[in-house]
Length: 183
Image 1 (cartoon, helix red, strand yellow):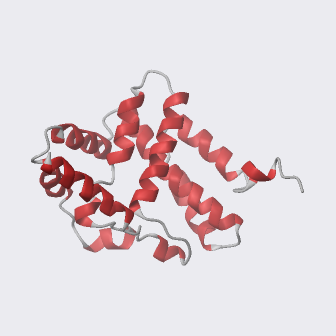
Image 2 (cartoon, rainbow, N blue to C red; image 1 turned 45 degrees about the vertical axis):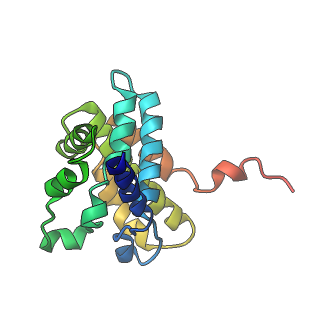
Image 3 (tube, rainbow, N blue to C red; image 1 turned 135 degrees about the vertical axis):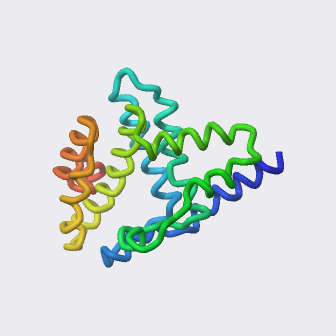
């Protein structure tokens, strides 16, 4: 049980590690845990829209996809050009003494290799979380996200991901509560 408790403490650290790509936007901030929650919720939504997939596998993949960043940090676009991260070693070290560690490692490997429909959806969920952040920042007046949005939209691979992105980009970030607003 001690190894599992240590895993939980390790995962908790994701609340404290900022996503570094926001530095290039000049605005916004988010921890890896905040990002992982949104990716997982998007994965859940996608699991309800998709047929012939394993919903639990998709949601599980979404929640663990950035777990290695507890040990490697969040490498942004520029850093990835100059720094090689040994994510395999980080995954091995994280999961080595966990009874279900091979399950976590397999989910992360499948996500990285995009070997399944669930992995493709999880990748799109990861991008859709960023699209939601970019759209929100754009809607509240920042111009920088407009430069990034076309690049992120091109990363989407699934029909569900593309349809969700189209809806996200054509919806105001605050319309969910504004539609029923009364004084």
